[in-house]
Amino acid sequence: MFTMRKLRDYIEKFEDELQPVDMAKKELLEAKRRLLETMSALDYAKATVSYHQARIDRLTAYLEMQEHIASRKQVDNQPKV
Image (cartoon, rainbow, N blue to C red):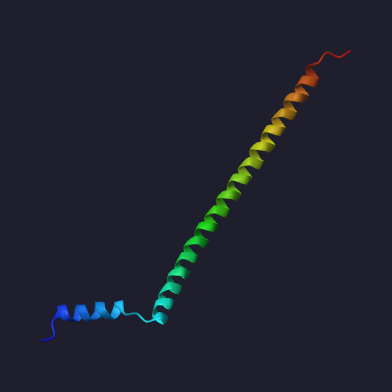
């Protein structure tokens, strides 16, 4: 009699006996998945770097402008001789 248990055992045995080609295909598929995940992480990291670089540039320019304005005020406030 062919029971569900025997069928399950047969399937498990078959899966355990994967041929090298099947194993290579399975590993290749996993490698492609990991590559896609890593590429997504890389896209995110690049966007984050761009964001922080733009933020640093903006803040640096703002502080330089404020320093320039402050130095002009000091020059303008000096007594004229």
